[in-house]
Image (cartoon, rainbow, N blue to C red; front, side):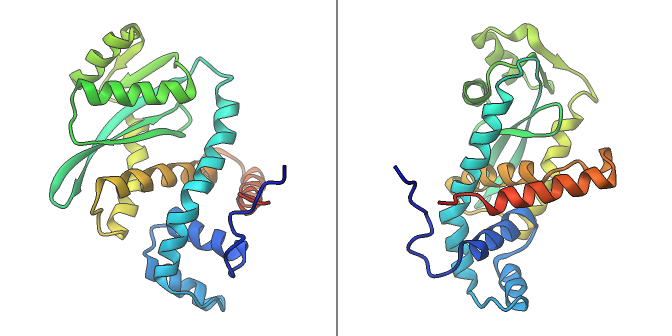
Length: 235
């Protein structure tokens, strides 16, 4: 059976839609900034059109990227996960964004909750382990909710805590914080959960760890990532 293209009812070409979504999600730009950048390229679209595009196609692109990565990552079981949570205000009310990052800086899971207790940590861990499998080591801070949740799961012996051990997870919050400031924060918990899931997948896709590779290798990886992005959701 032939796969139907998700762009079939749109007059705009898929290349323009992918470009608009990539600019908005990948870089700390507002909708009007993306509108101006596209206008310089001779593409006249409204910022509300860009909002509709990222809401419609952003989760599709992220799901396809995540599906390809999960199929490769589940082959490795001796992972070292780094877990951390950061508070995010929605309409003046504090919420918590839980994040799981592997030893290479790949954002595995993002989960938004209103509380920071054992139930929230347990649901976050179960979602991550269901998708990626059990890790070899889990590095956390000294929040007691992690230890209580791991006792329920039965992997408390895999937990490690330390003053500088969790810097990998702490640094992974920085790209999200830049996007949060560009978007003037969030209005709903649902929109926050949707955006962080899409943003994590797109960030993983284009994150080539420039400082750890030679210039020639970085250029090849960047070209391959861009070519793969242009082929997302192709019929």
